[in-house]
Image (cartoon, rainbow, N blue to C red; front, top):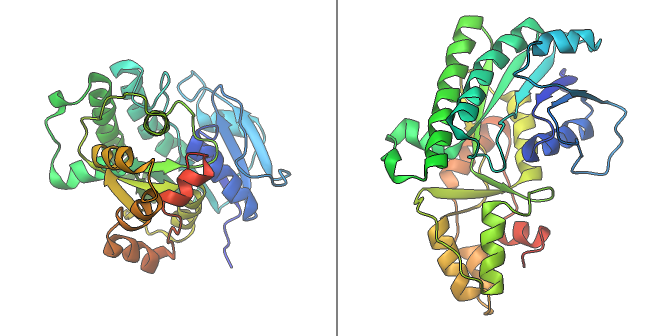
Length: 305
């Protein structure tokens, strides 16, 4: 039986943060949900007696730990700290270089704040793109759209700052990386959904230039994976939370253009977009996580099929 009973979520009103909030409450955690300006809504219809909401601008003059302590919320000795925060002006990649680098600075600060609050572990959320670039080398950033270039640089800096801050503060950090979560609560104007809607309706759209492979995972299953990383993950280890469907966006969109109006769509989604089993099996062995919903099921949930 797990001894952990409390969790702080920074960025709880975001797409992933709200799903994680629901997941933790459903698994008997008392959750302090820290959010900035948007309304916090849960992705599941569950009891919320164990939910505390705290509106706070993390980059403001008052620190996270000061606000939490002033609110009278006690962390105890078994509290997890999840950083789901990434501010932007619309999509994750917008807002200019200053906004993006502020996110990287927040990652450094948040680790220190979790130490001040006495949290047992800090869970850092990253992207598969950042992990791939770190391991295999970055592509030529000048070939990317300017907003995405800023986002990519800030994500790499955020990862480095988190590791440095963890080392300096002597905080146990587990890392989780994922690619493209979809499901209930996703923004209807998100790039992937907007493109899929255009394909379905026969409307012209521009193919993305990014040729990096994308992995598609249900946001509710991602939230379960993040909880397991918090409960069972080893310090310093990065866990790849992957769904069973993977493809580059250009390949996916072009294939969907050919199959949306035919009987082959379901078969294509279920048989052609397969994630390497070795990547999935490793995480299942280590923390018991495996996502079951393929892209066909996920798109059906968001009304795209």
